[in-house]
Length: 391
Ligand SMILES: Cc1cc2nc3c(=O)[nH]c(=O)nc-3n(C[C@H](O)[C@H](O)[C@H](O)COP(=O)(O)OP(=O)(O)OC[C@H]3O[C@@H](n4cnc5c(N)ncnc54)[C@H](O)[C@@H]3O)c2cc1C
Image (cartoon, helix red, strand yellow):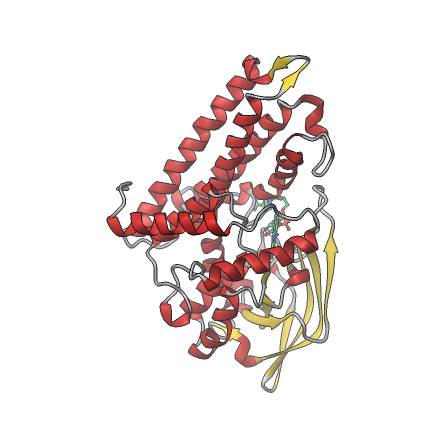
């Protein structure tokens, strides 16, 4: 990858950096509901200033920016420690999917409110018996004239509690092989028959949910990509999830590493600076090496995309390496705090307000979400290395 920037890209970076400096919304609220409101306002402000949906076509409210400008955006957001965009599922999955596979009417209806965060989206794929084996999903959609009637349950649906719309996969044909009988629907979360139950996570947040659909009526016009064509749409959704998102997340892990380094230079245990401990030094050095390796892995993959390639199974490599190195990094960072590492977010004496511990607990989910590590290894073995299928 050519890492030098064109004058246009440099100007883009400078303009964004100055804007973020002047418009950073300040510290994020501790309370999750308050954080969601804050996130909506923050995304709206970015949208009004033209910083949302950078790569989306201008006719749908985007900026028609290049992939490099998108990456500069992610880098500058991380540099400014700006809060993440709240409508992540809308921006990284629903939007790109509608641009690629939606009808013109769907694009006109849904894209702009995704950018402005007026309508928040969630991803209704996983079910209690269908996670890694997603095609085994059992939520059914039965045709009744111009509508479909949906019945079933989803689980681990991030942000469903706040979502206005859901990208839902449902079975529409039970007589064909399982991958071939699935349809991709846009479901209004305020429809009668939708029930959302939050799930408490080990870090105290409750952004996960169970979602129940009891005879929820969805117009046939809300199908994306055609009846029984949902599987290929689902696969491209997951590929989007594993590319730009992984790039953004490896930047977040670099911020966590910077925090850990800063703390190591200040934090003392039994009167000794932790940065003098040889084990701590080794772990931090190791984390830095992995972080650099991750950066160049991302650049290599992005170079392929810039040369016209499409997201493919190799994105499993970045997702796998990043999610595992992130856990190692945070494990090391929290361990170096000794007993103080056990203090949760918000505790009076917890270093960095408990941020590292909170991230460590959340990072456990990173090796599960968007495909577990075992599934990524299977994908790499079979689809990149060409090994025979496992038993
Ligand atoms: C932070 C987070 C956010 C999420 N957000 C969403 C969301 O918004 N929407 C959504 O739909 N889902 C979401 N999920 C769910 C996620 O996609 C699933 O948890 C994931 O696909 C794994 O499915 P499962 O939990 O059912 O585990 P299972 O598939 O039951 O797997 C259990 C274990 O068996 C292993 N395993 C399974 N099959 C194989 C195999 N063939 N070979 C080897 N090992 C195997 C797995 O690796 C795992 O260790 C989220 C999950 C997390 C952690």
